[in-house]
Image 1: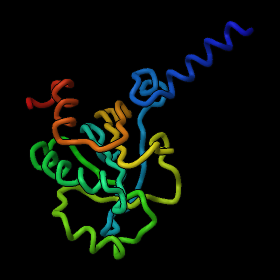
Image 2: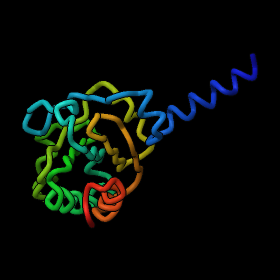
Image 3: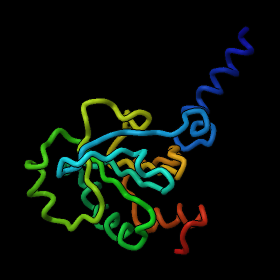
Length: 163
């Protein structure tokens, strides 16, 4: 019995490792439904068939603020890859308005809801960026600042873009 217990623990650990192909194949498509800063509902499932970058950020997070121009530049250069920003703080769009005026966002800014976004949460820190493949499966996650070059590197490896 113990022999199977260790194997089962290893399988569970592998399946829960972010970005592992086993985790993606066991978990299947991920989804969430969140409102953007204008109140429009966005479902992750609406983007099936496309690669999606989901970036969790907060206005008080210095590394998050520093990466926003990188994300804007990436989205402008690669519009075929959808970028979604998820504001991970309990503020209203009205409270965020002064901060948002600092940038010209070219991707939807979603507001975190009351329910945890499984399997994205719990986050280990901000910013956190997740990549969802066209089947809707979580294939990669990065905690910490990300640059346009880092995203380009990932998608170049996938053969989707030429950096």
